[in-house]
Length: 121
Image 1: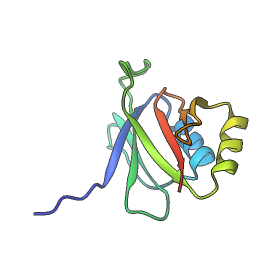
Image 2: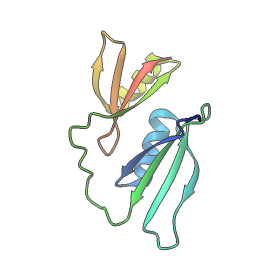
Image 3: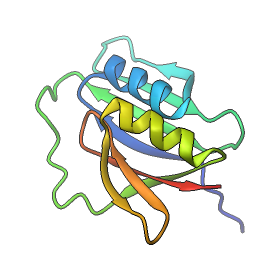
Image 4: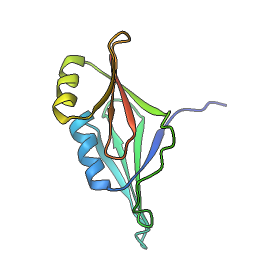
C-alpha cells in the first residue's frame, strides 16, 4: 500500500483576493474549480505547474468572519529557484512576516494569516 501527498487545504474569507495573492506571490494558478448548485462553498485548486501537489482554497459562504488560526503553528513550504528575486517581490508586496537569515529562509503571510515558508531550491 502506498500513499501520496496530493493537496493541502486552506479556508479563506475572500477567494478572489486569495487567488490574486497566490498568483502574484508564488505564481500558483487555478487548474480547476468546484461549486455546488446551492453555492454553499467554492473550491479552487492551485498548481505550481511542475509538481502534482495542489493547494486547495475553500470559501464557505456561511463563514464570513476571519478564521481563528489559534497559534498558527502550521505552514506551507515552497522552494524557489531565484531566492533573491522572490525575496524582493515579497518585500515589495509587504507580506514578509518573519526572516531567519541564519537558516536562509523567510515566511510570508497570506490575506487570511496563513504563513508560507520560502527557501532556496
